[in-house]
Length: 291
Image 1: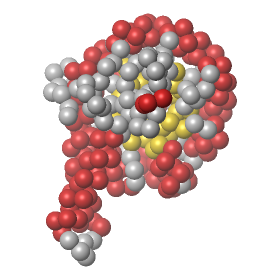
Image 2: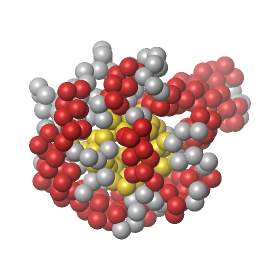
Image 3: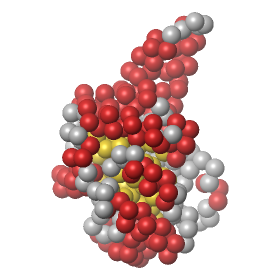
């Protein structure tokens, strides 16, 4: 399927996920090697996925290069493959991503007051919808490394009334809401507010996104899906699996190793983790917990 035919595909596959009771996993990549591993795993299982570059990746590699190999992969893929920009906090970066063939972007203005968040998302939506591009936004906050200590009490949680206003006024296509998940590895068991998730799901009709998938037990992922989640973001475990596999091969092979010798087993390790997560998101609820 060529890129032009993938416009609006993100919304279609998330709507199918909602109707059929599964979630579409979204995997963050760091470079071309783990990018390839993620796509290979999805094609092996014949599963639709989002494959995401975050702000650091597009800054370091360049959005033109990321867009180019994303476009090539989407045109070649035998599965519904959506190249997605994750957690951009600038309208201009989202626009640049769209200009470089991204069919899906996230504008994260959740650190701003609600009115500013809505206004920022509206600017992205106006640019995106004329181009057939899907837009994800955020209300509340996803905790994570470097910012977790900034929260007090439960002020990172989304409020249902804010979610309703945000969706109605911004025109956003999907929503990440603060329900207690966090980026990075968790200290202890994740405290997900499933009651809040159910209320948000009842209040709005757009697809809901679970951020901070790494470290959430599979039974909780499935519970979140049954409570309305249609997309599950997984990043940290992909990066750590990739880097640990590279480290292991470098130590085993010593000096004068060739890149392909190191990357072949690293890609295999990433593929296995990706397949585990695809099975959890697509399963009937009987999947085992993921470490």
